Image (cartoon, rainbow, N blue to C red; front, side, top):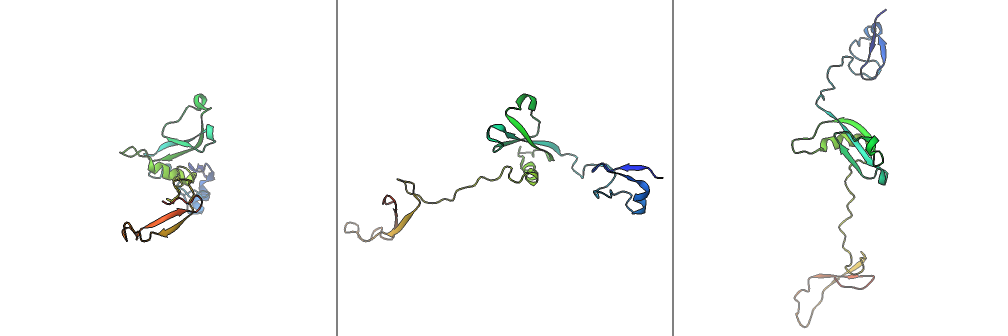
Length: 160
């Protein structure tokens, strides 16, 4: 009877004789990862990041930190959403790589704000419904400025 081997990744135990029969002495039969616990997939320099949400707005706004917050002390303000491993801040102090990895776990984390399209609106009433009119001929200026287009609001009839 062979010895029992524990997989460091999925914590499953398997018999060494079964691994030899399956020709996978160094690979876990359950998760497929190597059974030797050498390194952390080449990410030994990665640190633990903490993604906290604010209780005041039910996690709509959040913060990403590389040091944990004492939830016993600040538990009425923050709650932990996700704890994960990612590379440390780069030389400029940016944590963009950590945010990219966080988005694999929480897709809407630090999503870009939804920019409203740059639409033209009336300066008087704020309505975005208007009619485009060509400027015509004037007795005072003649054809000067006649190529310009003026907008007329459909609601308040303001020309702008």
